[in-house]
Amino acid sequence: MRQTLRLLASPSNLGTSSTLNPAPLALLPPIPLYRRLLRAHRNHLDREKRVLGDAYIKSEFRAHRNVENPIHIVGFLKEWQMYAQQVEGDSWRGEKLDTDKIDKMSDQQLGQLYELMQAIQKKGREDPHSES
Image (cartoon, helix red, strand yellow):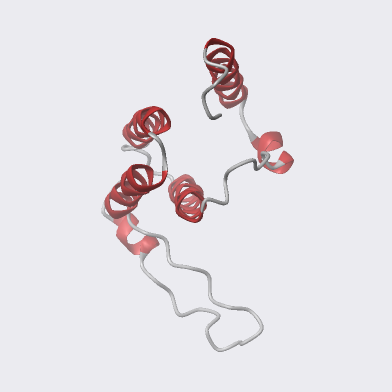
C-alpha cells in the first residue's frame, strides 16, 4: 500500500452539514489499523483464538502490502476496521456471515472459508469441553 493511501485514509468533511446523514468514519491508515487489530485480539480473545487471528491478520496484511488499486485498498481497510469494532465490542460472538458478502467472495475466498470451517469443526470434535 503506497503513500497515496494516506490521502485515501484521511478524514473527510463531506456530509457533515446534514444532520440526517452522519459523516462516515474515517478509515485508519494500514499501520495503525494493524496495531489496533492485534491489540483488540490481545484484549478480547482467548489465547487460541488470538494466535489464529494474529497469524491471519499478519498474512492478510502481507498479502495486500503491494496492492495499488485504491478501491481494493479502501475495501480492505474498511472491512478490517469493521472487524476491529466488532471484536472490541464483543458483537461478533454468535453472529452469522452476511449472505451478500458470501455472494461477493471469489472461489479462492470461499475455499479458505470452507477450510476455516473444517478446522473449527475438527477442533470442536477434538476438544468438546472448550468454548467455541
